[in-house]
Image 1 (cartoon, rainbow, N blue to C red):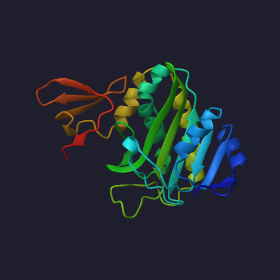
Image 2 (image 1 turned 90 degrees about the vertical axis):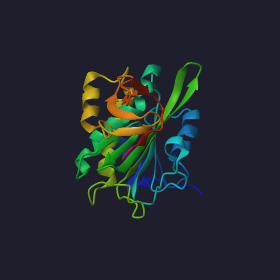
Image 3 (image 1 turned 135 degrees about the vertical axis):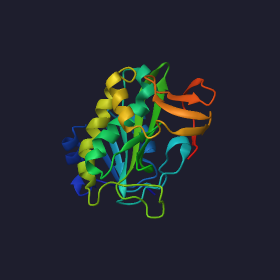
Image 4 (image 1 turned 60 degrees about the vertical axis):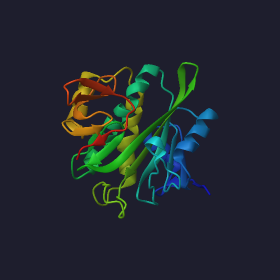
Length: 249
């Protein structure tokens, strides 16, 4: 059962909204999924910048509906509601948001925060965070976009493939950097700029690595339109979109 609250980490939701420069924070001690709540609020007319955040999720999800472990106090489990004006930018939004998140949380990490196409953050090849983007459309225009972020502040002890931030990092400090960065990224128009591509390349967890599916080859980076660039073993160039890749190592 969902359990709403009027504060997050001891700060009143109204105060937190003011501190973050957003119209509203909806906080929960426990919720099934912040993403589901955000969609419901958006359908009721909630403004862009509305943040749904929980101390714990019982039904957190990632890409392709995969379960995301969201233990109490262990991470940032949130969904940010946006109403973008540029439908074409949605093609690269997941990558753009992931890059923005990596830059925002870097000061709170002991090692380099990398981006793993299409929507993960990693430290030393271990998963730190996932960014999930879900849009709802009216005709050819997006009515709203829900940006879900699950970020391990403390990694789950029973999941050695995960990572976390520096010890004793305050979630509120991370939020104060993360939310404005995500909002700026969500408002950016068009494909990935040369500057964004260079910043992505500097944090690319896949560049130069070999994959065996859906095509065997070497990852060369990302395209301005968000596809993963792969040189196949026969020398052919491929661009992958919304694919699930399998690494050789």
